[in-house]
Structures are given as C-alpha cells and as structure tokens.
Image 1 (cartoon, each protein chain N blue to C red):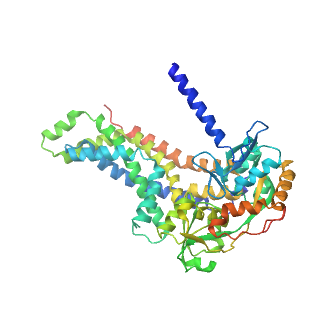
Image 2 (image 1 turned 135 degrees about the vertical axis):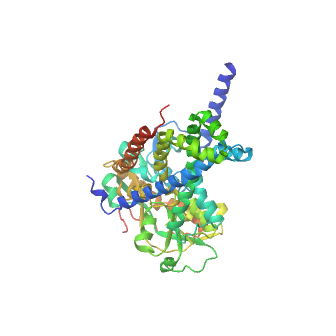
Image 3 (image 1 turned 45 degrees about the vertical axis):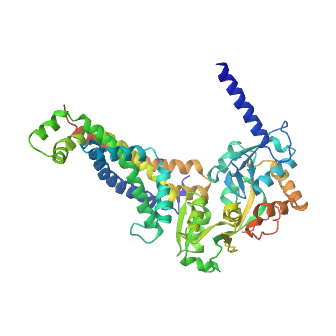
Length: 221
Length: 274
C-alpha cells in the first residue's frame, strides 16, 4: 500500500523542515525579545517602532513575505546572504522571512508575559538603582519567560507548519517533496496523509515536552 | 430593509448579466443539459480565467468544441478549475465530466483514469531572453540558471537527466520565473513548450522572450475521463473531426501563434509518443 514511498528522500525533506524550524525559531526568539523590550521601553521612538513592526508584519500573509524575500531581496536587490547557489540562497532567505514573520508573534506572546509580572517588581528594581535594561533583563524578563512557555510552544508549532510556505521559493523541504510525489504518483490522499503524519511526529512531541516544561517552570503566585 | 432587498436584487441582476456576458462568443444561451469540464484557470494560452470571468486558451477551445459535438450548447458548459494535483480526484468523484487541462498521459495516471486523445504533442522546452545567444543546444543549459515550478515533471527532468549540473530555482508558479528571467536572476524557464508559448504570447511579454526549440521530452496531452466512461469513444470521434475540419489548426495558431511556436502535426488518436 505504501510502495509509492520508494525512491523518495522523505527523511531528507523532513530534515530540511527541522533545520528551517530550528534556525527560524532561534532567530525569531532573539528578534522577538528585542521587539518586546522595545515595546515596553520608556523611549517613545522605540515603542513606536516595535508597535508598528508588529502590526505591519503580522498582518502580511507569510507567502507574500517569503516570495518577497526571493523576488524582491534576491532577484531585484541582489541580496544573496553570502551564498552562491540557489539552494543555499533560498534556504537562508526562507529562514530570514520566517524569522521576521514569527518574531512579531514571539514579541506579542512575550509582552503578555511581561504584563503578568506585578508592577511592584519593576518599581522595586528601579528603586534599588538598576537601570531600565538591567531591571528588564535581570528581574522582569526571567519571570515573563517562565509564564509564556506554553504560548511560545504554540508559536513554535505554528512555525513548524509555516515552513511549508518555503516551498513557494523552492526550498526542498517536506511540502516541496509532497508536490513532487503528488505530481508523479496520482495518490493525493495517501500522500497527504503521510505528510500530515510526518508533521504530527514533529509537532506533537515538541508540544508535549514544552507543555511539561511550562508546568515545571511556571511562577507560582 | 426594503433598500437592502433592492440592493440584493440589483446585485443578483448584475451578476446574471455578467454571467450571460461571459458565456462564449457564439451567443448560445444555456438551457439544455449541463456539462462540467475541468480546465486550468491560470495558464495563459492553455486555460485562463480572465478578470472579466470569461475563459480563453487552447484547452478551453478544444473542450468547447468537444462539448458542442457531444450535444451541449456553449452556454451549458460549467467550467471548473482542475489543478494538477486534483485532476484524478475530480474525475473519480464525478465532479467533472471530463478534463482538458494540459493533462499528460502517463502510465501511473492511466491506472486511475482513462484518456481520450492525445490531442496535442508538447515537448519540454526552455524560454530564454530574446537577446540571449548563449543557449543553442540542451547541453548549454548545464552551466545556466534554470527556473521551473516546484515539484513539476519539468523540474524533475532537469535534475535527473536534462541538466543535472545546472542550478535550478523552483517557484510556486511560472509568473515568478518570468520575473526572474526579466531580472536576469535566471537564464531560462523550462516546462512544456505549449505552456511557454502561452506565456510568451501575452501582450506584456511580447518580443522579450523566445522559445529555444529543444525537444527534451514528449508530453501527450489527453482528455481525462472517469475510468470506463463511454465518453472516451465519443470524445475521440469529436477530436478526429476537429482535426479533419481544420479547426484544430486554427486553435493552435490562435493560442500559440504569436510566440513563434512550431507545433507538431495533430497527433493520431490512441498513439502515444514516448
């Protein structure tokens, strides 16, 4: 029944999906944290930038962002991100696009976490002479992160599935292989089921693990 | 409330008027038995839904001719989008009566559906910039940057046999490839010559691109019908008549002519060129 799977590098394709996910997740976590810090900072210009960025980027369809990285950045502006062949360029562009997009959601999840930290914590930190960055970095963010593990897990799962959009610019990940197989095999439903199962194998353990972590580290108030 | 109803009525009337306007240019009004045909909605020259809601292209012309031969008026045709991945499912579920959507006859597909025809013999070819003289034979492609649609047979052919050393950029659609070709980001767009001719014949690209004329594969376009359907024989008869009375030639010239497309003679029914 599953003999149509022969001759296809299913694991290789899902490995690309995993690499896309991990690299974009790390990038989005860093950039999202910076954005969240901007949104709660006392400097109006930074707050304005953070708010505008989040509201613009999260309202643009991901496909548009990904296709723009290829057609706009690469083809028109010649941005190659230090790579020479199409495979590497496309992969890096996809990571860039996914990072830019996902960071907006990470930022908002993190900001909701910051809001759960009682305002007295910040006031006390400032009262003992910590600067704003110190107070945020040492006092508020560590508590905020602990309360947003579950929402961030949601963002991670969404990101894992969003990597399929990278097929639109030719990154050879799972969705691209799925198109190849559908083209050759005329087995639409079975092939779709195999790939859906593959994604569940990636997201379900990640979700369960992060759910457990979330319980473990949550701040008891 | 009354104003609301009036608006609804006005919108409905407008919709009907538009629908009527969209029905073929021979003015047949549809009142007979409906026939549902699957075509591509997004391939210029083959099957394209225009912004005004009408349909143009070679497959559309052929399908209309067949429907007329089967005894349906042009106004009774219901067009349905048949994306490449959905074609077998549409036929198996009976959502469409037949499919004319650049549907290449292959052994794996023949296990699922029956094919009438072929009605066009296409070849994988490359579209290059009109001023590019560095690509004269298929081997030249190995040092070039090619573009095609993610997962398509043409893209796979490039990787496995046509130009394994070439860089291949895959996109979700041919339009992105055409932009890349214009921007010099890629050197050639590759897929079936009939599809390439359709794109190159669009008014905004006229004179910018040319077909290289390499015959790198044989694609026998057939009319897909459900397995065991009695339509197959009737459609074959209609196709034979279409070729015999010169209509086939007229359709080819009309849809692919402007792109300097050198078509093959009309294929014999049931003869698949491999």
